[in-house]
Image 1 (cartoon, rainbow, N blue to C red):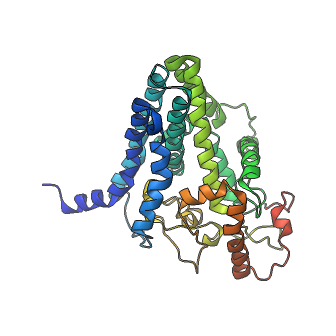
Image 2 (tube, one colour):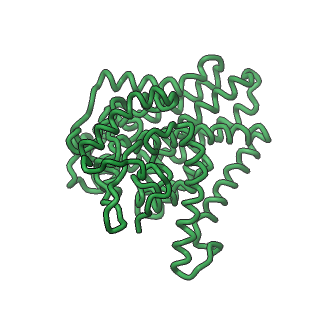
Image 3 (tube, rainbow, N blue to C red):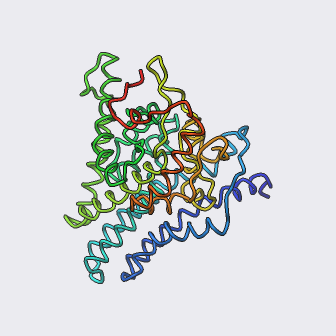
Length: 377
């Protein structure tokens, strides 16, 4: 007989497995065509937002004394997703490149939905995996990122974003009043540059050139080339194009979430040339239940930056006295970000209120929006 404790742990983890529902949805779109190709984005953006409204906020926090053994089902979730996504992505490329019943727009719709899946779930799971200290999980994270041609995200996220979040040196922190359509091309360019510089500088401190085999960019490039070649082998040039379409959508999904997570929030620049330590107040927090199921508590972003080594089920949520709160979950906030006037109408007053609450002594915020503000050491 299965111990009651094991059953309880599995039951508690079960809602987070809802992300696996996206797998049959993309296949239904590919097999049936027509408006069925809209299933995945509709479910991801609208269905989970509707469930958020029905289920409300989850303000409960897990016991921080929970052991690694007790997190078995949560760890399995992210690890199993890797082969499942691999088989789904390349199975779809093989199938769609040979599907006579799909027209051009339907083919695009299938791969758009696939990119929503690999971005909303795949990259979020890779984010969880790359934060772990063991090589196995980090390799799994690298494989997921290679499937969307964004492998440098690991170096950028660990070496740049977490160190410099809330400062002008972090490309991913969206400046106050910076619309998403200006943020997006900037972050694509600057995050690639900053991640490569971070790895190059680490090697230089060891007296090694950037060409040294320990530079993870060699692994990134090899994995990405392997994924592209596999797509080409399975679907020809059309397969390669399909692979690029889903990767582009996935990257856009990631960066719109990055935009939402830190918009307008900055760490105070201290007199000694440094910035204050990262606190929960430096990331937008959201406790919307269903979206946190889908994105494995990524919306508890305030705690993630405060304690980056916590696995997702242990991330704590905060009330408005400790961290700024998003009015809606990530899907609705991402849609608002696509229309900058709407976004600014919703979020700019919140940023101004945040500034007045935490930093009433700062009267000139202009330097915090400039990339040439003094850099932290």
